[in-house]
Length: 50
Image (cartoon, rainbow, N blue to C red; front, side, top):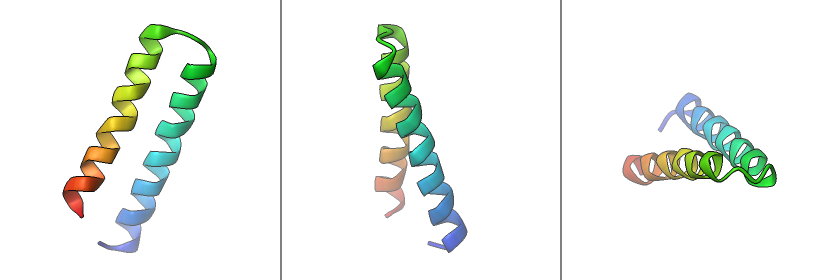
């Protein structure tokens, strides 16, 4: 993978982790579901692209 793709994935992971952390700390179950999906999607994408 190119460095641009790697940095994009790292940025995506950072953003989703931040969103997940924000949603978890703000105790909104609907947002937590969205956050879990947001975190799972990049993880699956990275697993496939390896």
